[in-house]
Length: 469
Image (tube, rainbow, N blue to C red; front, side, top):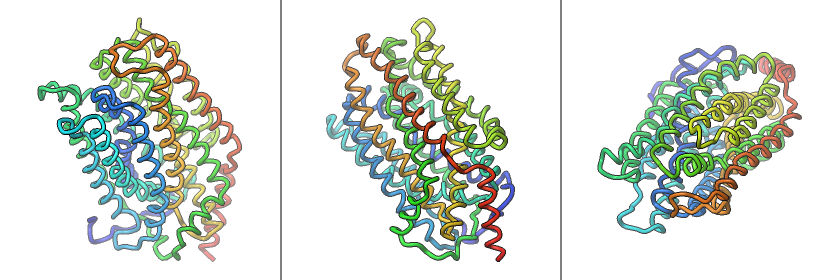
């Protein structure tokens, strides 16, 4: 458990001290691994290496993620209404982080010697359910804690830029997962199925360490400790009556559908079109591609924060989404067998756009919590963060199910060392077209986002006057 003596509360207004920013932001390393590692390892290990059908994996990841999404609002409500000597958030951050570390390690030790493909699939599905439940326990209170650390409009953007910067650092490590599995397997006299056990243990320890640091060191605001408790159904209804929140949530729903439906095609196109089915050079390229993407995020996140505080959050976000579309479109020209590493330019183009998404949408959500407090008199960061997460996860859950079938529809056959040219062509078309269509939808939705800096300042002024009165 966290320390028995509560630290002094963080200041509710103005600048957040750098140690406090770092303590909270460190938790994003655990969140990044939990939320994204499957896109790096699930298909390479369970489909390519173990032969579990792609559509089975799609259903397992989609259903478990859908179940996970429905637990988020409950966790947000529980956290909002928790009253302990350690605060509303920190006990759950610690517990959820430790449970995530354990279930993550178990996820990569399937009983290959005992069962066939059906048994391996059942193991994956069952452990995944518990993994995502642990993720909910951790991430909902952790995200809510970030939303309530400051009431300053621009400081929220700076705080989320810190989180995105640390997230990129964690992402640099995450991109090595498949490559490490192959290397560990060779060192231990096996293949990637053997080596991924070491990856599970290593990443599990990193998850636990970052969660412990965030839970123990980070300080909570205690301003909401004495507020009245709101019934769950009433809290959900109040959240969905906020049109500004619904617009932001719908945009993120569309963004994630666009990004995740055909995201796995990047590896498959490169593996079979550029490297003739050779896994090790593809795993190395994944490592380099992730490094390029994350370094791009590291370099440009401060610029995103700077631009966002001067041009405004909405214009900066819209520009970032346009740049992300350019990155996907460039893959048609940059994925070429003649120059295998030219595809890295695509990832470099995507990095600043996605940094805009991670930095600015969370900052916008914190502003929306002020609007809600003006309407309801309550601080409900946990419910807003959880419902926002639910919308995103519902989109991801759908895409995980669809992705397996889209991969099957393309004609992909895991038993073949090389894929037919028509299969590669379908993958390339889908990899460009699907993200473009959904990102255009998100841009259309966000074009009508109403909460400007001036309106947010007026809401803040009214809240401050209410507290003085």
